[in-house]
Image 1 (cartoon, rainbow, N blue to C red):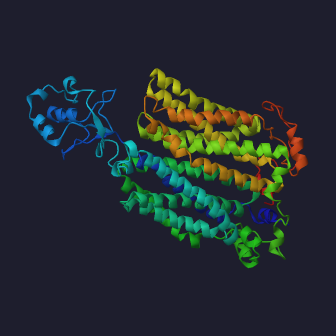
Image 2 (tube, one colour; image 1 turned 60 degrees about the horizontal axis):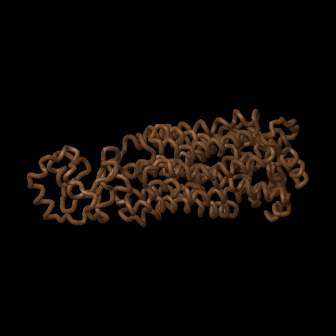
Image 3 (tube, rainbow, N blue to C red; image 1 turned 30 degrees about the vertical axis):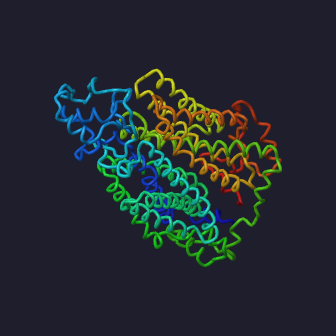
Length: 574
């Protein structure tokens, strides 16, 4: 009898398991708060150079006298708005005051524009002080720390530091979880989420703020990965796909709830405090959730493993079968080294295609999230549309994969995502309404979410059992490395500037998606096929390649196909 057989006998998803699972899913919602709140807290509001020596300067022009001073000291851009980063070099404080009283400025209009006062030939220099439009947000990190103009790269760098925390968490969490248990890194992640969230809210130092963001990035991965593992390992095999789906929906629910917080709290420090308060509940998790019984069994801690199994049986009103040696419940086969993948040309090509697709998907996914703040239009409406699109996008594949197949769904989605991002350049050049670019961005986001739902399932079905776990683990690492690029891709339009500011980042994201989408056409279809166990199985699947492999394969009688009712990695001893 194996561990899954025991769970089937005592109950796969009883009250105790549901309680533990929902407790491990909650941090996914809280992690979404911290991961995506940056869209609002790091928003760069409308701004312009401050008038030197004018202490009561503010963004909006209120009278003609004020407009006169502003028009004299701050140059106009080509679109007629005041410069965000430049001041006239030949204007001193004394001149501003004298001209404030000069009658020649009496013809200035209410918005400050006066043709006689504007001169493109006057020298300008970079300003060092700015005023901000507080009509949308009372304060943001960008406005408090002046992350604008030549300092705007600091926002992308801060987001990069957060992604580095995620990458660090990927490495550390796996090591700690396998050596010391799932519960320890999960609880440490909860502590880090609380400390980092409150730390950001009360810091006045930009370096300290970035240290907190690194800690939060690490916390997100610790909570997500270990929460998923604990949830997966405590339920029966037929419920594991539900666990995976619910984890994703928990993240999406966090995105939707975040909108409520941000709509009513427009000060970024108060917002961080409000988002961090629910995380305090995680401090009680040490006493609320158990260690994974599978991990306890793998370490020979028989008494503790049996205690967890007995709680499951008691809550399900069943009886735990007699077990002589709890370690016998686990698969004793040894996994081959990851080097095995380099023994086959077919496996090497699959690895390169899957890894490159996971890399690009992670780049686009997070870049599109961060790019919400750069899109024209109301940021709250854009965000709401994005959250709804993501929720639907993660759910749609479960209705298509067993009808169309993995390969058609994935390839169509990633090609459409890439095409929508690239084609957004056209309406920007033609001067089309802003909603056109926003719509194309949302379609791209929807397709990327579909791809994310498919790629892990599709990839797991392409590698043999003996290296499936290590191959997919390496793919996750590659994807996190891709996440390091997303902050700069999201802000490339701002960093370069110009008339294509809104669409440039979308074009840079979409181009590699088209390339890796073409690569994915080479992969074989896996719908209705057996999971490959050996290298021979891989070679047999190689023959089922075509443009879209529309011919439906006969399903196996074995429960090894990864679909809406089966779990890919459950059959792997890795």
